[in-house]
Image 1 (tube, one colour):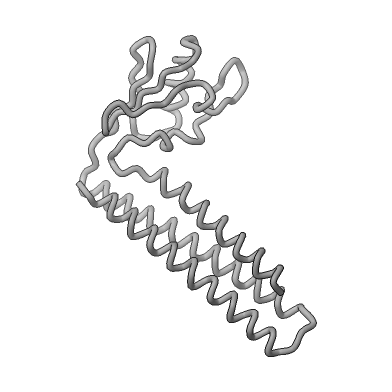
Image 2 (image 1 turned 60 degrees about the vertical axis):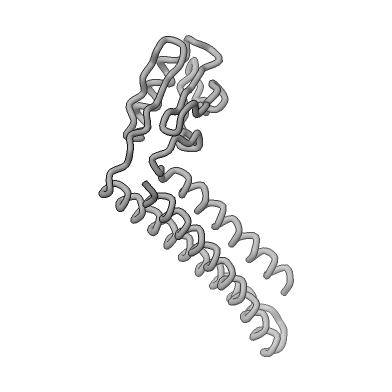
Length: 180
């Protein structure tokens, strides 16, 4: 039974990590290099992550600066960022690509808060599915009914712990988004 609980906690932690990655991509009006995670550049016919082709820095609160290692890749980087549909137009000065992050309007902030709530709810659904799987696995064990109940109670304690983590992260993101 301990094996089931360990596996369940590991899967719940993976769900939280996934939620964290998705929340980072909801921007808060500040420049964050993580906004560019997942952007692939067609570098001489090979899809390559942007992080492997350039240094990404934040010289000011609302500016991202991308300095490619190979200046010949600037056009491909600019094109990939444009196609990523981030809502930010890349500017190319010949040596670097600069992204000016626009300030968020109240309406845009509320929209991002809705996205954050949606991500958190999807994480809670994943946690409930993990709990269901764990409870089913516990029921299949050849142990006494009391041990099954104890196991299910431990799984419930785990989901309560992880649901609290989800709610805290959601509130923190909402506060970050609504702070002007």
